[in-house]
Structure formats: C-alpha cells, structure tokens
Length: 192
Length: 192
Image (cartoon, rainbow over all chains, first blue to last red; front, top):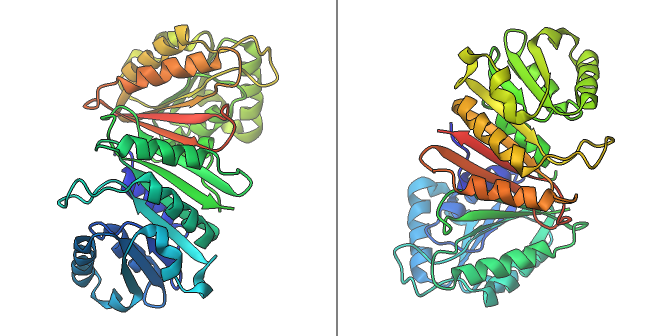
C-alpha cells in the first residue's frame, strides 16, 4: 500500500486538528494546494490567511480556489507580502487562536527559481506562527534541500525546531530515508 | 492531542498491513508488548514467531500473553536464540509470506543492561527479515542510542536502511526532534 506521502501525512495531521470555523494560515501560497485544503477544513464560517511574495502564487491560488472550491472566495484572504509579516494581516482577535499554519519552503515550481524562501525571513515567520497558534494547534513545514540555499535553510529550520522547549511544543520529523538526499521531508510542531 | 508516540505509530503502520491468518515475527521479544499486539492481529489462524537471547524475555512474554490474550498460546512460537537465526525457525512455506517483523533494539528493561542488541547480529537479522517478508509487508525498527553501543548500532542500521534500493523498499523515519538525543525513534520499511 505504500507509506503516506510527506504532503499527505502533513494533511492528515492538520485534518485531525482543524475544525469548521477555525482560522488557519498558508504561509507560502505557492500553487495553492494547502490553501484549498485548509479552506475546505475551516469552511465558510472559518478563515484562511495566505501569504506569498510572488503575484504569480496569488494568481495560481485564486484560480485553484475558483476551480476546486468556488464558494470559498470570501473565506480566503491573501496578502502579497513576506510571511514574516503575517501577524499584521491576521486580526488581533484571532491571535493565539490559529489552528494550523503551513509552510512549504524552497521555490515556486514554474516561477523564477532564484526566488526562494530564506532563513532570514523563514525563522521570523515561524516565530510569528508560534505566537499566532492556539494550544493544540499545528505548524507543518515541508523542507527541500535540493536547490541552492535549500540545505542551509533546512539546517537552520531544523536547529530552530530542535531547541524549542519540550514543555511548550512537540516536534516531529517524517522523512523518507532511501530517496534522493534532496527529497522533501516534514517537520510538524504542535503547541501544548 | 499530541502526536502519536513512536511505538503507537509503528503499531498503526503494522495494523494497516496485517490480516487475520497472517504470519508475523517479533524479532526482539523483550517484555512481550509487540508479540501480544501481533498475536491479536493475526488471530487464532495466524502465527507469531518470537525471538530473544534471554530466557527472561520469553518468560515475560509468556506471562503477558497468558494475562492479555490467553487463547493465543498455540499461535505464538518463541525461540531462545538470536534473531539472526529467524529463518530456521519459520517454516519454509511461510518464507516470503511474512506480513510484519518488529525490532525493538537496545536492552531489556529490568534485565542486565550489558546484554544489548549489536549491529553484528542486528544487520543479519534485518536482512533475514527482508527475505522472509512478503510484498506489502512491513519491518519496524525502534532505535535507541542512549546506552553504551546504542548510537553505533543506530548509525549502522540507518546506513543500512538508507542504501536499500528504492525500487524494492520504501524506508520511513518517524522521530521526535526536541526531546533528549537518546529518545527512541522509528524506521519503518515496506517491501514493494
């Protein structure tokens, strides 16, 4: 039957923790897969906040939403800015109440491969995500190390995750071992 | 809700792949937890083959079986020998048909901590397990690195697992990141 894929496992963990009406964040809109998934989970009473620094990502996400979830347009709020600024775009009454935040690091397939996430903004964005998260909420981070700068970013995120206090966060790694050294893998954090 | 524990996740993966009537192997009887779990899955028509080099492990497993699964005594076959010899104890008509093999490395809690699994026998036992396994079958390996010799064994098992051909096996790691460096973690292998 095969093991569940990295993205599939991330979505399983999120699906167990997000309820209709919740707020969720897609920190890296990319092609919109996570946004559509989150929008389905939170439903029309919920809200998804999405971020990307490339207009192309917002456009792709909008197209995917219109096709796969046409009713959800009012529940998804997208911002063309760095995910490090996510706290400013999420209403204050949602701070500390966000159920899930997804990160899909690296570059946007099909776009300029020189435009990549970097630890200088990724780590502040992760810190912001933890502040926005509610207890029992989850952050998923899909890491890639195949592109230039990718392994440095992955190492920085791993070091950051490994030092989180166990009393406040549980951090899980889900990774295929005998694939390319550059295959994506998952870190998942739950706030206790 | 917390993430599923290492042992709990191993049992989820096994439970998805083992059917009543199947053959399964507990390569390290220890305190019998895996044997009881496997015996419940395979049922009275199935068979569990268990191995340990310490009589204490066989005694503990027998006691646990009598308490938790008294009907299963005839379906569990235990051998006081190295798991490297497992092929000799499994009937030939079961070779290539085993649904699951569990390894719980390190030492038996409460017994002599100098008696530990070592890569010299663990790696041949893992190779034997792969030969016995059916397509779609699973090997789970819980690794400990906290005791003397543990980190060497864990590194050897990881290196062995990482070089398995992707066309024949899928290898997954499930590990908590911000715990003690010595916390147990899981490698799971599925035969394609």
